[in-house]
Image 1 (cartoon, each protein chain N blue to C red):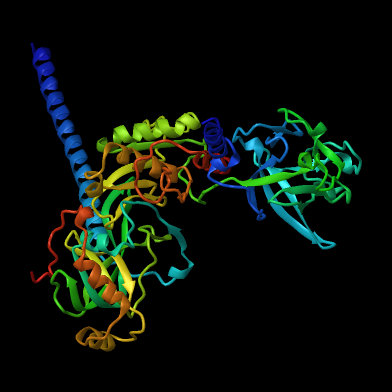
Image 2 (tube, each protein chain N blue to C red):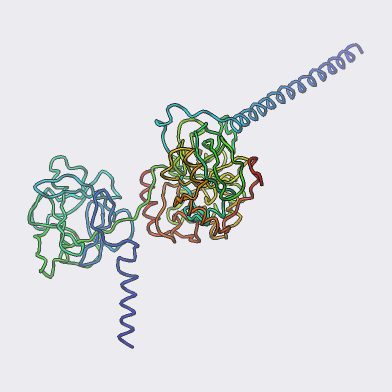
Amino acid sequence: MRKATICVILVFILIFVSPTCFAYGPTEFEHDHLYYIQNQNSGKYLTVNGNNIEQRSLSYNQNQRFFVRFIKSSDGFDYYSFIPDCCKGYKIDVENAWDINGANIGIYGDNTYVPSAQNFRFILNSNLRYQIMPEVSSTRVFDVANASTLDGANIALFTRRSINDSLVTAQQFKLYTVELSVMSYNCVDSSKHLDYSCESMFSDCAEFAKDTWNGYRAGVVRKYIPIIRPKDISIIGKQTLPAGIAGITYFVEKEIHISIAVWDTLTGNQRNNLVIHEIGHALGMGHIDDTSNVLYYAVNSTISLESSNRSSYDFAYSQY
Amino acid sequence: MILLILNIKIGVISMKKVGIAIISVVLILGITLGSFAVLRQVKIKKYSKEIFPIPQNIDLLEKEKLEASYLFDTDDKELMSGASQYIVIAYLNKITGTSYKDVEIVKGEAKGTPFTNYTMNIVKNIKGNLKIENDIPVLQYGGVSIDGKKMVFLYPLLEENTPYVLYLDVIDSDLCLNKAYVIPEVDSFEELKNVSETDTKIDIIEECILAYENEDPKYATRKNGKSPYDLG
């Protein structure tokens, strides 16, 4: 019985506590993607704090996401830069381009004097774990100070350990893609608001959708007030949508068209889902390939946001 | 006494003048507003009825894919058969232009949903009973936006001179497209006629017929009118 209980607990931990619960797994990285970067030893993630890089528990905030951009191939290695999602115009940078143990890893504006201090290569160890080596060094890699597992532990350069070294995990990192689905269009105005009007039949669901999106990022979606708040989008019922289409976000006309024929057949949750979904498009988000996501291509009964919606929203918001 | 009479006269004249002025203002306002309303209606009628030619620079127009939320998987042919009023095998001839539905005038500008207009020669009915006739108009959701600046589309526009299985509904008495499947390896209208008259097996046609025989009316949500081309 005890063994069975332990097994159940282990399975529970594996499913719900390990990173696999993010609906994405560690990835063999592709450049020009956004990643969370997790230390193998501590399970914590690289985090921007001020101008410094340290490790912290996952918060899903922008200061833990890094855009990995391909820079060049040189001497048989591919080099990349890490652009923090929170701080555009900055890159991860080796302090003073030093090649010494303890050289701090932080963020810095575009380093035109020593660009190699902002270029890094990935050394694949095993199981999609990487050591991250700067171009300024051929012997040192990112390292969590003292192999700490605590929040706030600093990241600095340290001599690369061999795979057999028990402390190597403090130098190993896994990359997790941030599932993003963002479009090049949105209906948000220059003050970063989406002010909507709607026909009375949609008003309850529009109110619900507004609260859902504002529950993550307050005050962006607002009801339009004549003269005071110019209208950014109108939610209108239509009889002209093709069969099988429940709603369409129409960026040219800044309108959300909802099929009246379909609307009449939907349950309360499906109606809320549909309006949350279309307002998501108006906010600049695309479809997400997950049947229980509010931005799944087909109407469902989900009425709450998931991490992929939050990260997509953050990214879309940074583009407004 | 004379002064009093003069005063009353002046008063009467003033009252009359004021009355005339008010009536004039009301008339002018009425005529102006009426003209605007008439012009508005003329504009709405123009955009609602006319088919506008496709601009020469269509390939240069900015393209905008509309983002939709679907009620069901529109590639599920059994569900699509149930949701559509007609299913036909037809040869699509040519694009005749763009028309607009749900037209309204907002701040003097026309707004409306574009539909690309085609003509088709129906060869065979799978569902429903449309006239087997040439050059029947058919509309596809999407096309050149009413301001002529963009191409908006949900599904890619159909190809001219191409045989299709078309799933259709009636909207405002027009035959409008729900879904289309190209019939491969058929190069002309004559060839398509031969195929439909003989027992030649073409996978997509067989699939569509079989799906219709097992149609699922779960999503037959629209209360359609009848097409003027319906013989039923």
